[in-house]
Image (spheres, rainbow, N blue to C red):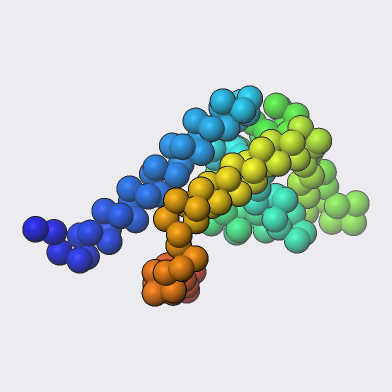
Length: 145
């Protein structure tokens, strides 16, 4: 019999992997030809108040070198523009193209549909204890990592 710790570990890992797998397959079905990493870089650029390379790397919790590799690919694929600050050439800003915005609409729609289905099928909104527990888990990871 599994311990509660083993069950929670298995649940978190399995849910995370399942969501990524389903998300990738669904986006591919809908015509998105980017990797999940590339889609999540686009999302981080969109969701960063002042999208400099440094700020986006911090948001993604990756090194500047790792982000540079992804951004180079997204620039080549014409999903991102990169430009420097006129006053401080060291600051590099990122801007999404219209193609990137379309991909993010598809990505956001997937997340909306997934959450709607989870609530409909499992009636999570009626389970206050589960919702509070999930919120506690989320807050733990935000604070810890």
